[in-house]
Image (cartoon, rainbow, N blue to C red):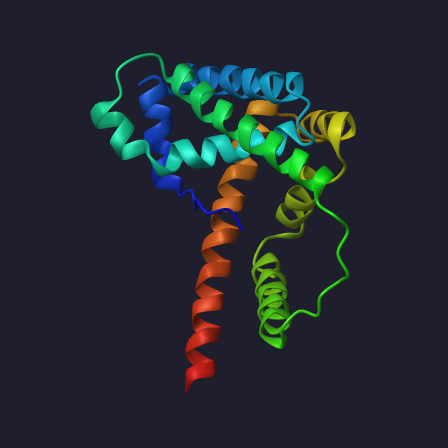
Length: 194
């Protein structure tokens, strides 16, 4: 899971920060998203769309501070965050190439249990969505690289909506899913301590 947990409230604040007119804000959001994907692609990042989502998550986590303190074009702030993620991605790629191959270590039982619990919560929470909602979430994150982009275009066309509307719809579902999983994990932790 991401370190930053976006909320619908933070997302709505982000749109207002981009532009008080919601339609114009959605257009700006789309332009920023497109530019970030191009930045990450130009730097050879493996998953530009995922890094773009991470950039938005980071900005969303700071939206209250940004509204109060940031002066300037919002896209410049997004680009600054993206620059840091490009550096981090580059470090990770070079470290992965230079690390010697190690023998696989045995994971502690606690990690297996935690992972199993996470998957159980994911399954429970996915069941709360309609079949169409489940398909939307799964389909949106299928494939990699250009295939992922083409898949998302096809999905938007099937639904009769724009790519921006598709991203917003998936974002809202992702927020709901994350909140549901957090609640499920907390409830499971409470039951284990009883």
